[in-house]
Image (cartoon, rainbow, N blue to C red; front, top):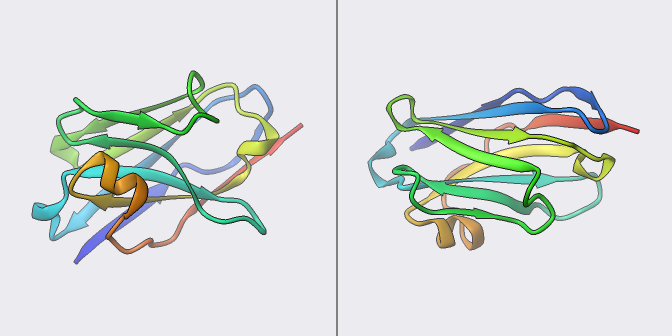
Length: 123
């Protein structure tokens, strides 16, 4: 069983920056891609960004392109989400999940969701 553990969420002012971390443990042999997702209060969970372990394939939601950067440290089984120039609309609980490819992690993540990390952007 794959276990994601996310951290790094906090209160930040609009225009500020923060970095989230997602570390994957457990049975990771079937995991080739990791995605970040977020869910704001009263809204559905949405895809934010995805990356494969070799870093050759990266995908972003249109709403974060140019502001967020996803990266990975394969040896540490950790994926990062650098969030720059945040806006109040980025306020949400952030989660990570896994799949075998980036397109699949965007549409059909297969791992457990685990606990999210709360990001709150003040205006």
